[in-house]
Image 1: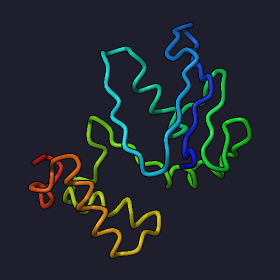
Image 2: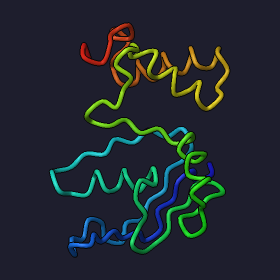
Image 3: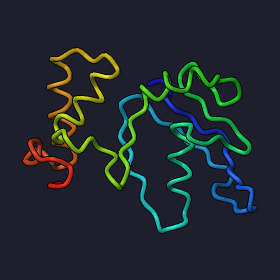
Image 4: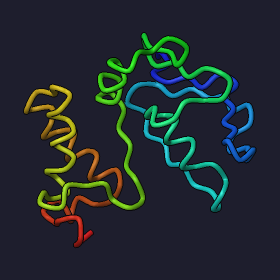
Length: 141
């Protein structure tokens, strides 16, 4: 399978000289699910911000299909973000939509056909053990 995302020797050093990530390299394939866990201060939030280009690396390169942090334009970043799904620990969910509707909304935003939305949404809910909560709203999760 082709790499959807590739981190190549990525380092993130903040202005206060705090080294958040040091020479990180990994790849992910399209459709692959990854859970990111670790203690406070380990660099999880920084890594996620780099993945969705909320921040850029101090050194190294991040590549997505046809994009690279070395040459992506500001206009291209929203296009890239439509292809990246990130679920935050503080539920960046739409509070007026159910768990099912939140997932389906994201799939609709990237132009997924209805039939595939139904199938994929149910698969995703099942994969995280929330099939029984599909009609629940974020505060009920």
